[in-house]
Length: 101
Image (cartoon, rainbow, N blue to C red; front, top):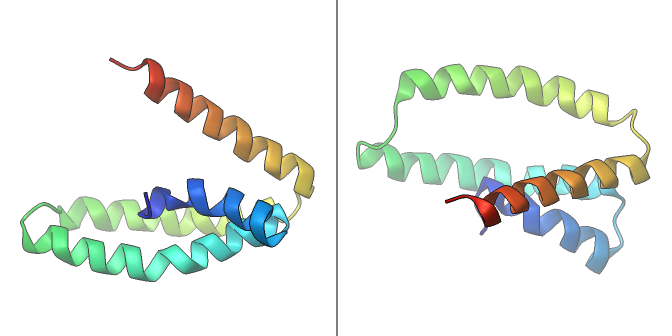
């Protein structure tokens, strides 16, 4: 609920409860979740032998590049459209989870 996917809860809460714009809510959520969740959770998984460092490194490079360009590109999307894209993504993920066997 509060892992990296916690943005699914945090972003709407920041928009509705604190009146943030969609852009500010997404950026704030990333800042709040990035270091504490990523580093501490990874250490625990690694200690239990449940993390592949080679694959994690390759994924991290992809996230680094994708995160930079995604974050930069999102700044050109109007706030209302960014909110709609976010909402449709949540609905699609929720629908898949609901009907998945």
